[in-house]
Length: 121
Image (cartoon, rainbow, N blue to C red; front, side, top):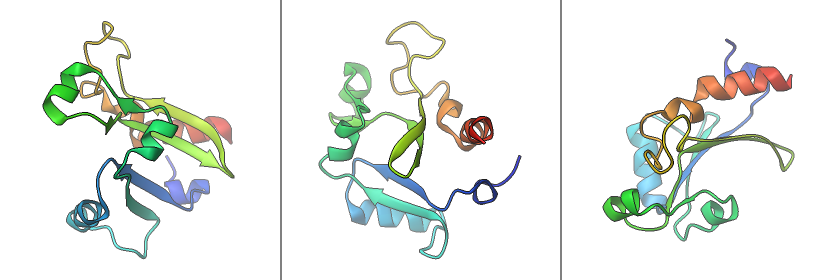
């Protein structure tokens, strides 16, 4: 498979419900610098998370992580239009069994997004 940049992707945004200091530290830990195509951003009040409809509200994960967390997902957005949207939750398992997508995160990972992009090309 081609690299995302070879598929026309000019920016990858990684965000979570947290503040900029935590996101900067996470980016540094992952070896991400400001010269590449990956940007780490915080969503401290969960505004983007709520607007996208990906707030994790299931009592299981919220009981451990606290409220207002973001579901594991990936999206391809082109010129403001969502072309692909993949959420890792309850896919292939009983309702509520894996609301955080821990058992099958691959639905929101890069290989799945590459498949989606190839279908869109």
